[in-house]
Image 1 (spheres, rainbow, N blue to C red):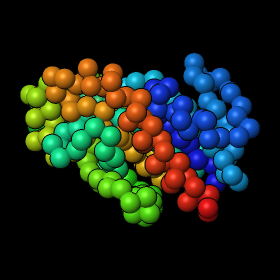
Image 2 (cartoon, helix red, strand yellow; image 1 turned 180 degrees about the horizontal axis):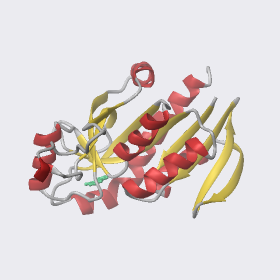
Image 3 (cartoon, rainbow, N blue to C red; image 1 turned 90 degrees about the vertical axis):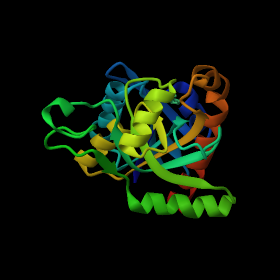
Length: 231
Ligand code: ADE
C-alpha cells in the first residue's frame, strides 16, 4: 500500500511530516513531494498550493507519477452548516464544485456534460473514520463539501452554496481532488477542520485558527493511518 497524503497549505501537512520516518524530498512539476515511511507503509506527502488547479495537478501527480493507491486529504474549511464550530471535524460524504457554472445552457450548477454534480467518497474510508472517531470519543460530522476557487467571506455567497449544494462546509480543493481520484479509480477521503464560518469575519478567523484547526485534522488523519497500518 502506498498512501498519498495531501493538504493545500504548508500548515496542513506540517504536523503529518513530523510523524514520518526516512523522509526524502523529491522536486517534480514545480512542487515538493515527500516520500517517507510510516510504520510499514509507504507514504507520499505534499501540499498543492491553494485552489482547484494546483490541487488537481498534485493529486494527479501523486497517483500517476508516485503510484499511490489511496489518497487522504487533510486541511481546514469554512463552515456552512451553522452547527459546525471552529475546530470541528467534517468528513466529505460527497463533493461538488460550487463555481462551475454553465447554467445558461440549462445545466444545474456544478455540472458539465459527461461529469456529475457530486463525486462520492470511498465508503470504507468513511466507515473507518467513524470507528476512529468513536475510539477517540469525538464527534465527526459526515457532510457535503463544496469547493471553488474563491475564499468565501459573504453570507450571500454562503447562502447560495448552502441552498444549491446542501453543503455543510466549503473549501478550495476537495472536489477537484475527488474528480481526479474518481477518474483514476483510487479511493479517497477528504477531511477538514473548521477554521471560520465563511462570513464577514472569515478572513480574520481563518488567520487566527488555520494552524490550530489544521492540527486537529492532521491528528485525526494520523489515527486513521494508524488503523490502515494495522496498529
Ligand atoms: N477554507 C477555509 N475557510 C474557507 C473559506 N471561508 N472559503 C474558502 N475556503 C476556505
